[in-house]
Length: 398
Image 1 (cartoon, one colour):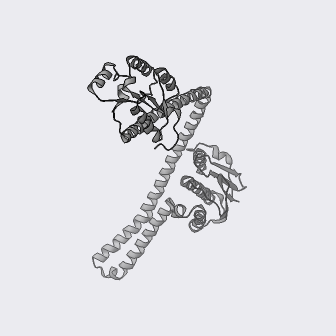
Image 2 (image 1 turned 180 degrees about the horizontal axis):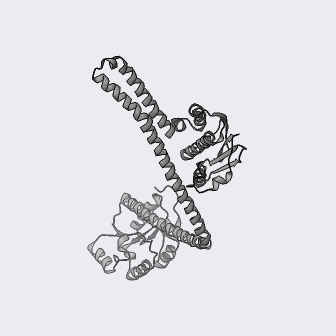
Image 3 (image 1 turned 120 degrees about the vertical axis):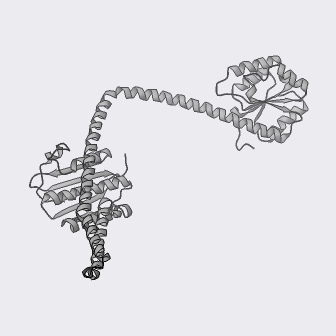
């Protein structure tokens, strides 16, 4: 049974002969919960159709030549989405079927949605048929609503296109500027990748390869049963392989610190401070908010890498062994500041081209990468006055 009262668009229109059998049809449908509207004439039927209908149930006796012409005309004028389901109640006799065929009831405009139901009508068969017809009719109304929505959307799109045309010239300028920024950044990223490859290659060649070669030499002596090597080789091989493992572990951590992936930004900054002390002798005084958190992994990684770049610049250029790292977050952004009291530099050098020999801080590319995600990098410095680098990253990607 229908779960809710049917709208006028889902009324069952009944054009039946006034007999006991047709009265039973209306009783069965109403008893099944359908909203039925009986009409007594073709004129009433046409008027009722103006308000919409779900299914038309018509007795064969009411299908005259005039009725067929009227229905054919109405069907020809219907909207493309509409195809009203029609159920014809008939005695099923050859004479009745032949008569309906002569009236061209099954013409192109109606045949796809006409169902012949013979009397006596089974209540289950009738209600099942009406349920199916209503589902088909509902889909038609859904198509109608979709077409209406698409028309409204198209109108909005035309208005939007007109608005876009008014800003087309300035947009082209902005695109050209952004294209140049992306091109410049791509050049720097390529150069940075090549520098990283060179660094890794040097580690592999100058250190790891030498360790493995030494282990190989002691293993060869051991295999040759060299008397001097028999007692010393196992320990030396173990030592060399241990150094090699530590080198690969250190290299892997430098490339992608597990603490940043697994424990979050605060532990990662604490690890970075320890790393700078251990590897470069730089003491980093931390002042980090405990609620510091960036949900986006890409933004978290970018902030960490730019912060590390700022600390590397302290090591390479500031001439001091102490720096301060402050970090805090707001509702929509996270800020990290790295401050030192070192030699400082001319801030105009940050405006030199990325591929210039004067620009060796790596901060220009960092600033460009931050700008692409809605972040920023500012550097407050001057010769002899120390440096304050401030990084801001949004909590969400734009």
